[in-house]
Length: 377
Image (cartoon, rainbow, N blue to C red; front, side, top):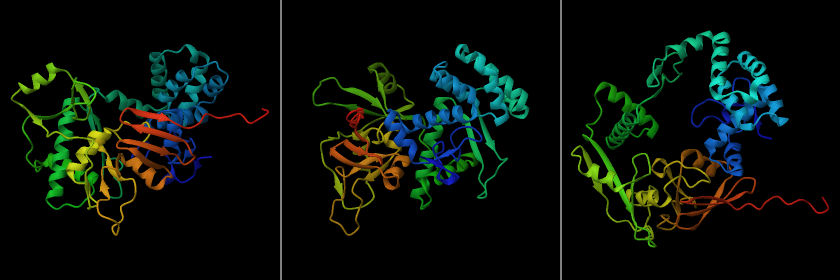
């Protein structure tokens, strides 16, 4: 139902131009992944991983597929094999399928990794050498082998968490500084420019030490407030952690004004101002698409009812705005998904095939009626 021939219409790993499954599997449509995920009760990223494994097993591991269909191999073990085989060439995947079949049900994770490593060494020696040359889990690779038509190179790596957070903060600060200086490039472009400026020492001066913003949430029905750090969070904190930060001269602790999430805020402008954006971030906490967990601070602010330049004043208001990540914002705009706000922070979604979900800051509830057998069946 959802197979496509055009790679531009195919589902990929997020924004990366990498299709699901290994080399040679059929392409599936971009829009089907999110709806499949909501039906099985998982995020869009979880659905991508599930479908990638399913495509891999069904089209590149026929023996593993047959064992799974016959009930002789648990699905989770088949998926573990598929997760290892996706990087293999078709020839190497066929060899893995043949060798793993007799022992698949009893094969441990370590044994699976060892078998895949042996197959890579045999059928993909150049790739095997690349893996052998990786001397540490930490590392950064700047790939100039396939420079794009636009003159860009790909960077990927694994950093210590603290270093990664500092790099993220530095890139975010300088991208914002570029915008304030008059650069009208999209955010992703400005972030890439900021990274280059950091390399040349041209980036705007940053804040020394680390800045931690704490939000103390005071629910109306309890006297037990909790502190939440939202630096790539949110993360609940203990009193000991908060006290340690407050006593550290290198940490700047910011106390925010009290925000009542019951207040209705509005503006007549299309662009969402900071005071309304902060309100939405704290109310929604994550992208409000069913089962999505991306933090609201990395999301866009979507007008549920489209903004009409010739319409009434106050269309940009907290009763007409929700936090959506870029992928799910695109699905709402072009993919046939619709939603309404039942009450502030509570959203009712309807999928292209008619499934319904209620979403609030506590999670997602599937409201779709269960299948009913026809009379006389």
